[in-house]
Image 1 (spheres, rainbow, N blue to C red):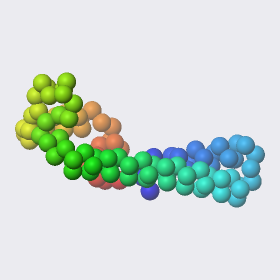
Image 2: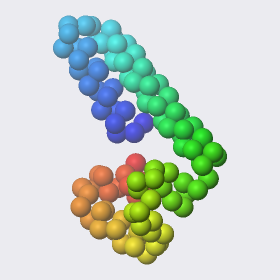
Image 3: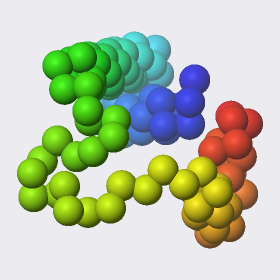
Image 4: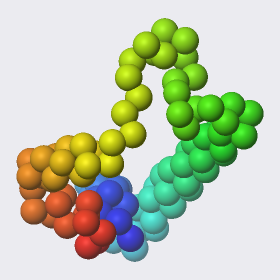
Length: 106
């Protein structure tokens, strides 16, 4: 379970407990809220994935240049070294737990 899901589950449990529900009822309400949110997140991610596959299939040039005409004048850099430098700089500004999650730790 990712950290965001754990936080959502904990928040739902606290909300149900604060509303005066019994601990078992609060846990059930929290589980239902977490499950609904988790399913909603999954469907949203599935939609994004399918949309990106649709774009890549029907517009194969999107991997090399912009789909939007007004953005075509922007340079499209495929410099791997530049990307790695920017990624290292970005990681320096992250906190410890966030850095670990970006490295695949959690």
